[in-house]
Image 1 (cartoon, one colour):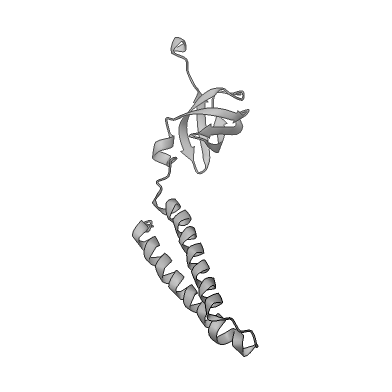
Image 2 (cartoon, rainbow, N blue to C red; image 1 turned 180 degrees about the horizontal axis):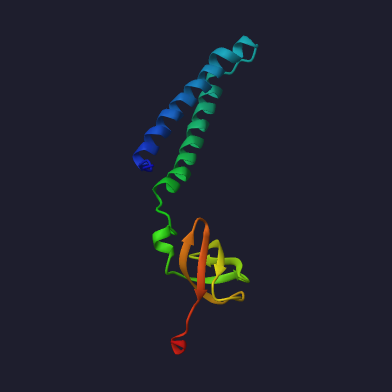
Length: 137
């Protein structure tokens, strides 16, 4: 499935904000007065303006997640160096580019803080090998 573009996110955000704003105005002007709850015009305008400001802030926060490219994609993670976060015996956790991943060591136990190299990605589990020092080769 092809991901939607950032432009689509903007169009969707504008349309949904317009619909929500119309719903709020209808609630304040037509529905609440039926139950005897009346707002003055300045209060209705203030509520709508505050909602629009809130919507803009949420758009800015959400838009960053849409346009940001993933750091760790399968094609980028294999071959990367990582640090063991929880002992691999043979399973444990490692950090790759600041993200915590479940990992399995094929070289036996690996202690916290040691460096490993990612050699395979299988689902959400990484297969790693101990990082070889230059003197070991």
